[in-house]
Length: 254
Image (tube, rainbow, N blue to C red):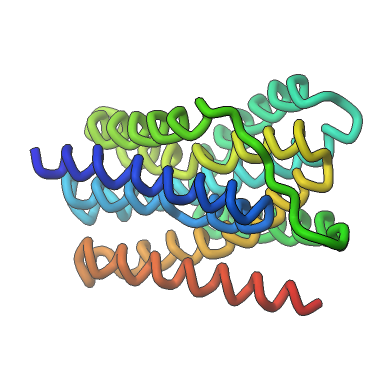
């Protein structure tokens, strides 16, 4: 019961904080924050607490497959929306995500997921490397309902995955963990309201954050059984944050 109330408290609070920060500091910061392993860390934390560290360990390959599929979706949406509108792009991107998640999960190889993810992230960062316009970053004005929707969706996602984990199994539970509850609506609204350049800022920030997410999952994979749940997840989150912001700083200097 304590775990249930923790889920109800921590998930919407984190969603609210990141959403407000994204609105306050613009697309670049929003992309970085939305790329951090917020939902992923919570899912892995509660999977490990409720199902055991071994279950969480077995969920990592699925999570890495899902991460690759998510980045393929962002890349596809970024490219295809140069020719089609946001609605058509969303529909096609959803199909790309489903196909990518299916293929990567069927392979089930951690090394393949890592390599594909790194290739996609590199491609995204290169394609979105254009310098932003001078002046202050644009602030994407989101509808009032979008933040409550994110909070509700993220909480429901966490509750659904953890409550049905025994039935879903570790592979499917892990595959659902990287679903971009924060980043995807932010990317679409940035595109609609700010244009393709603002979309690029979100996608780029998310890709930089995803390097940290990749480190998070690999750290969990190599430490959760040896160290236990809380030390492993904590260390993995710290690693993800450090990697994300160091990489962001290095890329800013170029």
